[in-house]
Image 1: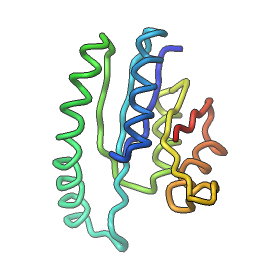
Image 2: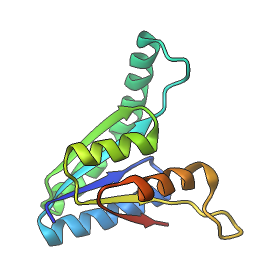
Image 3: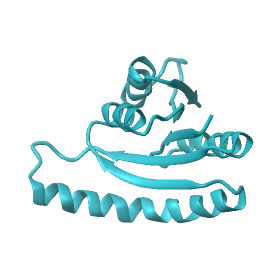
Length: 138
């Protein structure tokens, strides 16, 4: 395994997914790609989308700074990026374009034990449409 993708949204589940991805990347000497997918407001204008992405990027850069330090301490080559679009679709296309071999994504459960529809639907769509294996972490 040479490449791992983590879909990151700063939730506790996403942080757990990142921790697992670091371990896998270190064990397999794989490159790690961490993406956050921000869904811009619809209908989106170019100027609004750019401002939205800048705001989201600024927010996630704080998390990414800490995460980069963890990757360095694990001797893992890691790439971090904020993208805009439909989350599941963007994750799947990004993974295909980079020929990612494993996607690791956080999944949220409701109290009743079912996947929560909002995030669960993203994880479910990624699992069903990805060209590679997907590990859902909760």
